[in-house]
Length: 427
Image (cartoon, rainbow, N blue to C red):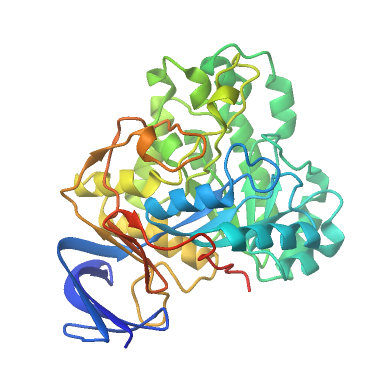
């Protein structure tokens, strides 16, 4: 074995004092006692699987003044995320084989962490979805308008899903009903206006359309960034092939507590009431939600510091998601078992990855955490290009050491590798 790691390790949903054996980047053994060519002991710390973020916008190419694969993936790494999946609403939009190849090439040179890319489904590319599936990790369909969204005609949804069902790739949905968005659209002067422009009925209506469309389809479908109690209610009797994700900003923030700098909390779908927030957080805690996803969507301070109606929607979150929830797990607001399922195991299942759990055969993707090392989140300490966070001053526990494929990328909070370490997971 190349490496053995000893400590209090999260194995089979419990913490055990044991050792992990690693060869060629994969976990090859888990026993009480192991010794490899290199042996590392982590005392007074816990060892967990890294997180997998199924939903990021790294803005590369075309919008790299906000973020790029280098800064975005470095942020992910320091937040304990070993693999990210980038959305297609870049410039150009990722809707063709050339677009996919270009984005993969860019990310391969820049990314610190492993990565995948999604292909956007539009009115014009459904005839070659099967070809796109050979290059992408999944498909994204926007059922409502949002930042740089890809236009899609509802009447073509069933045909699109039938084509996707012939591949082995999942499909992801932005669920806001475009017709209802148009009906409610108005000039927005504040965060309350934004909420009124995108009421929860938009999400509920769109979810019902997805439910009717994916039923009896041989595919995996995922609803992104669920934001409302009404949306949760609509998903109570969902089919087994449909999962949904919740973000930290929708499950931890509520509109009642947003006062100053309101544009920095403008996001689609919007942050809603404390009742919605509580329902979403309880869904995470109880395990009815499937995935915790960041929807990391940064904009510059200058872009956000504008009249409310003109400010873009989106907030950063890839670096703070796992650390905030590690703190909540320590405080027993959520169990480590539920957190592992939400941020590691279920994302790996959805995207068919050999990651997400500490078990033989999986990539040796690990975080080492000192539960006593609580910190206040500070924008200046994060690695985002945008240099701000909606979670300023929140408590979090950041990993001190991060392994990806058995390589130590962060050691005692210091980066150990150069950009380009990350591998594309779609091939």
